[in-house]
Length: 406
Ligand code: HEM
Image (cartoon, rainbow, N blue to C red):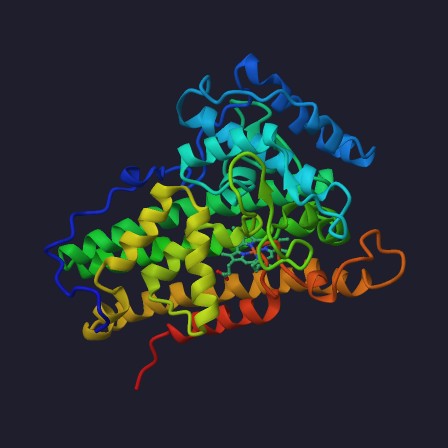
């Protein structure tokens, strides 16, 4: 037994809606707004024109000309989320316009002050997070049509337009596939409360099916995202200012803080879905650095989503429950989920080799537009990790969760 309580009596049933998670969309923001009140026109205009203005090196000048807008006209969660997304995109354009060898070290007051205010209201850090650029950055072209890539668009892209769009939308579809898994998780947990073995087993099959569907959705990445465009453009504009040699001291938010702030860049490591599956299945990150990193990523999730991960981690462990049960079917259903998660992580790893490692080697040639890049940055994820060792470790930890007969 680990230090979680072994008693089920203290745990009320889990309701996804209490964590702002929808049955149909999971962690995705449903019906995101596509525009802010007219007062915020300057933000929306700038965020939608990032690519053109970065190409012509005008983005920073245009930011400097922004009026200092009050956040008092932003109403409700959806307006705040759209404002956080737009200001995040503008911040990335401002910091990385000249590439990693010449980042801006100071975020001007006209941007820093409202951005930090909106971030505080949402309980999110003032940087473009996964919950912005993926979970809140989408619309249906035909509102009555299906949620399929051909019928979808982003509200904003970062540099590397088509590949940026593809990266955000495919990640969104992977999240959509995870939504049935979130329902499966609640079914597992709530069936544990009543010791309903068949219920747990059926719910685990739902979880497994969802993880396998995530892998299927992931495959679309290869059709819609070009590796070189991802590596040299998209990735650069998602990088943060923590564990990044380009901005070793962080970024100074003028008019807000006295000291520069260090924050990780936007990465799908900030996805709550995968951390929920890990909690359900009892995946233990054996390396302390990886554990600490995954824990830190929770601060980049919207607070109710973070609470769900925490709640799952405080429940009596499913794995221990299964180990003490005599049902071979239950054990099989659990192992199939672990196996699906290992497969997903293996697929993800191969994708990282294709999109980060291989282009990183090619980029070391003289024609690289970012030739000032330090070697480590060429193979670094947007979340600041040295990607491959970190991801291999977590994949191996997932394998360790498998229950073997002995
Ligand atoms: C081109 C596609 C992708 C690339 C190149 C990529 C790259 C990376 C990298 C480099 C990391 C290490 C952390 C960092 O420094 O950012 C990472 C972590 C992670 N990524 Fe991705 N990623 C991709 C797509 C996705 C998608 C679609 C998902 C799922 C929604 C995802 C989920 C995760 C998770 C959960 C982690 C944390 C480690 C883990 O739990 O295994 N990634 N990714």
